[in-house]
Image (cartoon, rainbow, N blue to C red; front, side, top):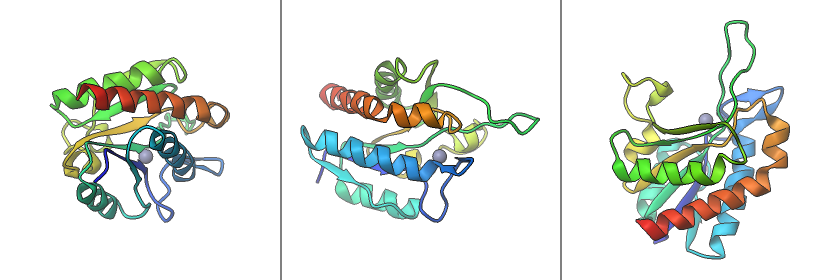
Length: 180
Ligand SMILES: [Zn+2]
C-alpha cells in the first residue's frame, strides 16, 4: 500500500503528442520519476511502471493508494496545422467535488510557473463532454488527476522549468493528502 501513485502518460509504444521529435511520453517519464523521487522524501510513493493504460490502472488499484496522478503534455493544432495553446490545466473525474478541489490545489501551485492558468476541468475523452470520462479518471478507485503542465511545443520552457514544476507538484500533492 502506498499513499500516492505517479504515472507518466502514454507508453513507449504509443508516445502521445510530439513536436519536432520531442515526445510527450519521454518528457512525462522525466517528470513522473523526478516527482516520485521528491515525494518519496515525505510520503510512500509508487512510480507506476509504464505500459498499457489498463495495466497502469490495475497497478494503481492494487497499490490501494489515496491519490493517483498522471503527467501529460497538452497539444492543439489550428486549421493551418500550427501548434497552438499555452498554459497549464488539471483534469478530474467529472462531477467529483474532491477531484475538483484537488485539481484547483494543483493549479494554485503549478500555474505561476506555467501560465496562463487554464484551470481545473472535467476530464472527458478528447475533452468532449458528450464522451465518457477519461479512462484513467474513470477506472482508478482513488482520487485521480491528469496534470497537463504545458503544451508540447513549449519544449524549452517545459525542460528549463522541469525542476520547479516538479517541486510545485510535490507541494500540491502534500497539500492534497493533508486536506483529504
Ligand atoms: Zn497525453
